[in-house]
Length: 362
Image 1: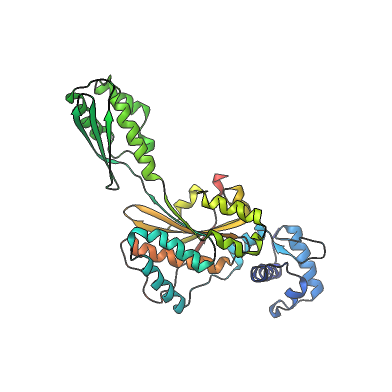
Image 2: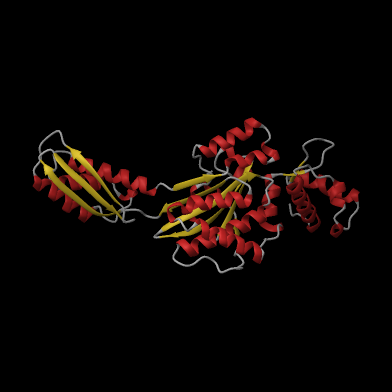
């Protein structure tokens, strides 16, 4: 059913008043908005219809209305104003971002703390290396029962392992396997290393000692570890200041989930373009612990083939426009600094593109 312009204005008023007060919104509060120009009776009727359409809920018979996830989704997609940071806010955020990035070893962790301070919500930052593969293999023969594996990854990180064998092997076999691995395994991602490839390498080397399996197991372990995102979480205790989390059990469940490394994003979120903002509301989230919360996330270019995400978790009653504007600006600043450019110039307004979530994970 199509929703009228008057209903959209009333829904916008309810959402924004509820964000401001955290209290159910009644028809009297809506009637005080001059731009509506309709009677209290008309407003009550429209509120009732918005409830029946699923955009609002009425917690108690005599209470006002609160937005549902469906109501928030319409608000985020169509109704809210896209905020832009003032020049003063942009300058302050730029200064604080540049301070955080002075220590590059702590840059992403520092950004998650900055995002939490800016929004008053728990914030998460992560980076994920794109398409990690092996760049070079060096197999170093030590003695008949010992050799060293050295794998250089496409991220220019080297990993090594000392291997002790229960049986004796000759140096020629180790050298032959080094040649075969450099010929057949370099440039391949974890999912491209198949049992057929492993078996054909074992056969070509005439490896009856099981060395191929040892090298492959170490390679897969390193590729998997390199592809795991580096994640930083800050400000979990900020949930306690939100009225929705006054219930200690509810707050504890969500804080424990976040602190223990629970995922706040579906895999599809990593595909977001730089500077885009995605909003996941209530049931759209990936975990049961997040079904009463909203997640807002922005993607950035971290350089060297690495993508990053910066996001916050809070109640569904959050100021989506303000949070999205801050995350968008942070993402743009990170892309310019870490992706090879400079931080945004002083006073630059942020670009803000709201994308709907991809629910294909469900």
